[in-house]
Length: 281
Ligand SMILES: NC(=O)c1ccc[n+]([C@@H]2O[C@H](COP(=O)([O-])OP(=O)(O)OC[C@H]3O[C@@H](n4cnc5c(N)ncnc54)[C@H](O)[C@@H]3O)[C@@H](O)[C@H]2O)c1
Image (cartoon, rainbow, N blue to C red; front, side):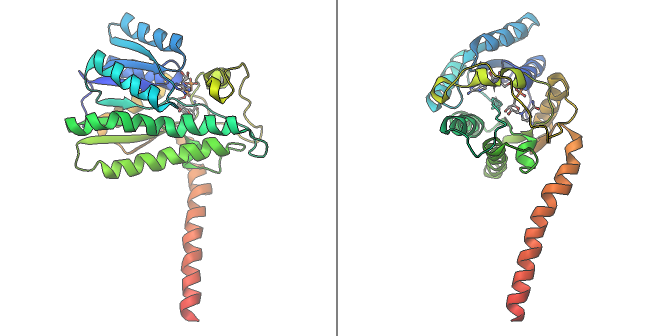
């Protein structure tokens, strides 16, 4: 079990939604928080509101898709609070557009932020945790990664988030015996800033930022949206109870059981049948 009180934590995407709520929940549990975000004013606002509630927090500007920026974030976090033993790579950006016609910029942006953003973060922050023999990383993936054929017009995003699930579960295996723990958070149906603000998160080198509301395809029925404050305690529980995976919306069990699981089992049935035929022949 990782104790939260007295630890230093970094939360990326801490300026809004899930990240902001998790930063508050960690601060309420007695952690000192670095709130990192590509939108500095939002990071400042979260840090200020934590301090106003008696917590300890600073803000940092960071684009997680830039490895150098994540390295600079680590230096700043260490200078402020020493070794970081709770790490929450949560920043993300979405895209609901058909693959046929997607620009290079759109693909690179979504993959670099959602996949490489987590990878860059782990690469920078893991060594101090290994050296300390303790710590916990919680990375935000998505139900769109756990049931990758669920959401239409979502190829780079679902692919990147499925990649985060693979990355985190493989990391967990690597961490056995080190004292460092990890959780992959399959976020779903949270009422956050993503729909209204997503395009504002797009870095200039990927063609942003601009103003455009996210349009979810009509043939996708999203689950009942929950406030971020309702899901943040799940993250705290996952840290305290060392859970490998966290899902925030129980309603997607059906999609997993009916869409994804049969598809995998069918593949195994097919390979069994193939070898049965081959061996019989
Ligand atoms: N809200 C949902 O229903 C939902 C569903 C599935 C997955 N998620 C995932 O949950 C995580 C949190 O999203 P949210 O719902 O709170 O959305 P949000 O839009 O409220 O918050 C995302 C935060 O990430 C920051 N950000 C974006 N790009 C960044 C970058 N390059 N570097 C640093 N910060 C960056 C934004 O400024 C924002 O503060 C994301 O990884 C998202 O993909 C959310």
